[in-house]
Length: 290
Image (tube, rainbow, N blue to C red; front, side, top):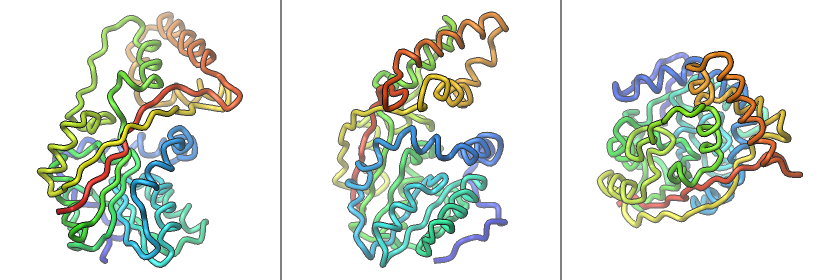
């Protein structure tokens, strides 16, 4: 399989251009610098992805939106006689993924700087495609998943972790409630690129069927997001998140201070011996290429 060198800028669909710009700028740099924190936040859902993917020892695995490569490395370990290829549009995150894989001594990993919606994957080159909260951002999800389907052999498997709707994810509701400072906030759409782009089961089934997949199944995964070891740790992490920065940006100094105090109090209410835990809900989505 051919892959561009880290210096080659990828082909990016125009519908993904804004997303690519963000992930190759400050957002990508921040996620790369705090990769351990982001990975730990949703780590409770990782076993469900492994179970859904069912990776065999010799499988060739494609990891879509791999970020810093946690799921790619897990796939490589599950397929010691196979190979795991991580694909992401963010150069900073891929640099971190390569560094971590080299440090782990994983020779059966490759990381490709690419927009998976349009990248010319070798046809039928993979047995399994996975994504750990990274497949909700396609500007055209049917086109994106159709491109992934072409990369899979006939009968190849798809396994995704995605978020359920906002109303079932306390961790983000708390951030929005406390930092909105009384302002009405629009509901994130469940059929547009973003964290909740694959939250609606009917939308997911329509997209994957149109993209060439069958046997689509969604399993509800209740759980928790770990935001930090204690209140101070969680507060520092959360206030650095993109949604929090965006909400705080439009507030005057006094309102901002009050909103931050309310956020800290809400996080303190969720401190446990295992850290600051807030309710979360994800989907484990599986399908097969027709």
